[in-house]
Length: 167
Image (cartoon, rainbow, N blue to C red):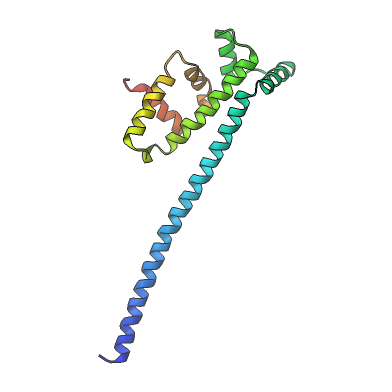
């Protein structure tokens, strides 16, 4: 074998190595993009959840919002109106419960979004907790039923399927 043949074999092996490297980089790029997308979604959900929890826990802010809404002639959300109708809660109390439930929904929705990545035992525990949270006589169920048209279709399907299963 002469040096030209060795050089040709080296070039072929080098070309194969380049293609393997490009394939590897393409896979890495796809994974990186997926991780960035997941990070953006998680950050957004975290911000919404934090804002909703702040609204749920700030009594002064809730009183101001309820007072301003009534003064401006705003209608209460279907959840707030139904909650005040069925209970003796005030407008600001109903407002607080609305935002607490919105924050809890964001937490559940984040879990639902990545449900396939959870270990089986965690999925089962999640389902048990949610069957209890969404029982027919709960505040969570009332919030869900009155807000479902504005919620993520994927998450609504998951909860509906969960509730349709025998407990």
